[in-house]
Image 1 (cartoon, rainbow, N blue to C red):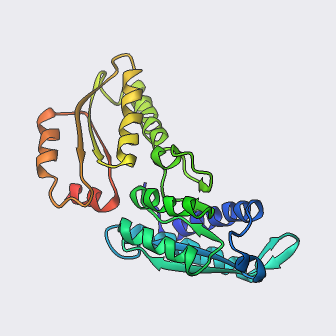
Image 2: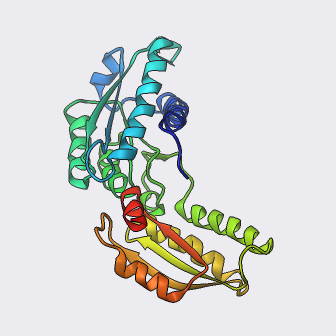
Length: 261
């Protein structure tokens, strides 16, 4: 699942331009001040420090590339007129409280027209509440947990597939390997998942597939863990003792690296 930073940047750039154009043409600025000014001001926070800083940096590369290209084109065409687009970006330090307070500042102090979402389901889930309360469009490319979208919010837009689908897709690939004779049948699975909405959705996707497999798979280890763990040895010890055929983990990059160490 690894990608180079340049590929990540271009992927985010495409997301930003396409979804941003759709949001800008479909929604009206939420303040009279925004209507009076010529430029479109978009606010965003990203985890540029803290546990999610690595991927937050990739997102920033994508945002920078998108706004640079838009600027070279003379801005976005809205209502038949080219308007310059400005990004106000802050570091939310990978923490919910900071992400929420900065979103409130961008909306109510900086008077931005729209918000681009941060990265990480827990941060996005908390931050979207502020956008919804203030009726500000929030375009999200960093959170895919179903809990974000089950609240009936009208101002939240997503560009990722549901996490449950991620689990089901992974199992579809595993199933192909089993049918090709590369895995035993039944196959024993160790399933580790972060104790977040993201992790629970991933678990549901795997578990649902296994339940419908007619006995082709057995989940022998089914354990959750907290984010930003320092020692996973006890958890991995359970995996080793279970002698499973497959090890499936839903984890943010820092935890995934710690598990490998």
